Image 1 (cartoon, helix red, strand yellow):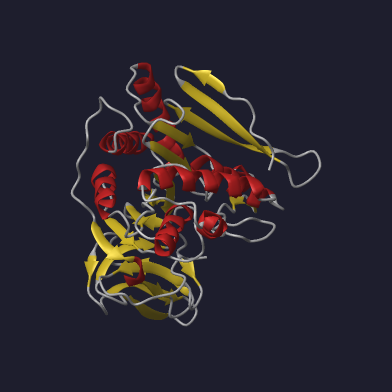
Image 2 (tube, helix red, strand yellow):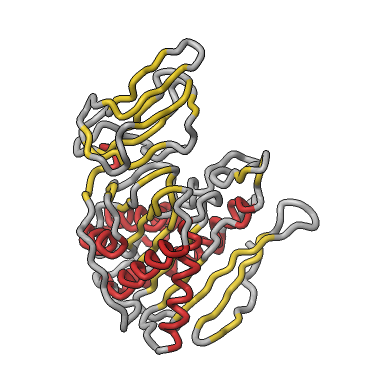
Length: 381
């Protein structure tokens, strides 16, 4: 992995860059991190956006958040270490086809940019055998050091792998990791593990999430679970002397068209409330929204297109629906056949697909229910 470049410092904030090698001669990209507060201060909070490079709401939120952090830094209110990567995927940002961004998957390999991260727990477990003591705080430091050591050994073969290792290198020792995404059309929601439900509630109450989808391991090795699953695996192997060293969540900032300065500025202020709640900043109010509905990710079932055609919706995002309820229709304009889209489970209609045309068998929406109906790899491609 290409070495980290020297940082620039301004008003207590440091800018760090990490150059990617480049897939072809004469090309080069870099990752940029803004670091607020003293290096090593606790808690450490890491935030990034744009890992799916066609999802801009979170990128704009972090733009406004950095304005607030600049002000807080000038007032001496940064108490922890706060790391912000406003654009986590410069590779995806440059990959367009037919005047549309690809964003979600790498154009060369079709790999989802938010899948396939290194499994830190498996990388460090054998090396920790016999070295952990009885004090969880000491073990926390030892395990984070082991994470960094193993990441430094990796030899990425592609720019995407190099980017993944670089992002993990910045975040693997954080106490809190927030990965900002969005859906096609959706209510504000988030994904988190079962490990720290109190913190999940703090986050929901700060950002105004309507739904929290909870799962121990969702499958696919996404960025958020690259920070929570290792601690769970190490606890299973070594016991309670291993703490749950990181809270991580994926925040879905509504839909792709929800890009608005006013909304993003308020979302940034809400993130400041979370940062205040966990002790990373002081001097700002702690916004409290009602807690979200917490439901199992395995209870989120899909609505499939019964035929190809034109999609229309009757139910609205956020509606509570009953199993079998008609949510919308697909019209085949050639046969003039109109077929209903029905809710697969009782729960919340929380997302729908972007396009208003569809093919038979295509997933068009998700309804989140209380009963687990799916298992295995629960994340979409």
